[in-house]
Length: 195
Image 1: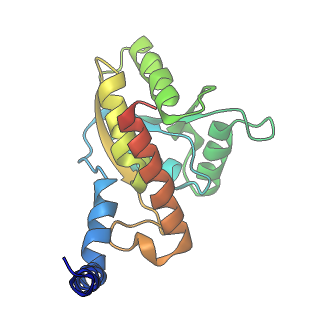
Image 2: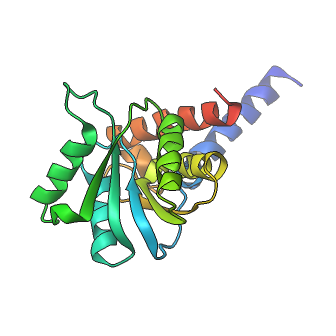
């Protein structure tokens, strides 16, 4: 292949990528998302790691709508000696939800994998058979994969908590959306590799 032909093909490839960017960027964003229909469950389980309160509010909505009898709010105590689950529940109460909707679940988990294992043990201890897993939109695929492979005896449905920074169709338009995508894409690859 001549040098001229190589540069022509390279330019053509770059132009094709640029002109179709919204299509393949949206496809990459959609890959991170799993969204199941809610069903009647004993708990809406809130994963830790959300510092805006979206997850706990989404779980409160599920309880309010009658999909779950209570929200089990997970969190670790590594926030200046405060437990994330307590902070999340206090936020939900300030947002208008009754405190009775929520139950705290403190774990010392440092990853989604560790957290899912701890939650699975707790739900099995309580003989729970059905649960809704509530997490950020960009986190749903990996979190769902973890509950599917690391828990037994519990049927989960994964419910995304809406995120103003990350949507599959526009995550690249904001700095926070790009950060969410980049971190979650790396974590998803690492999870598939068993790291």
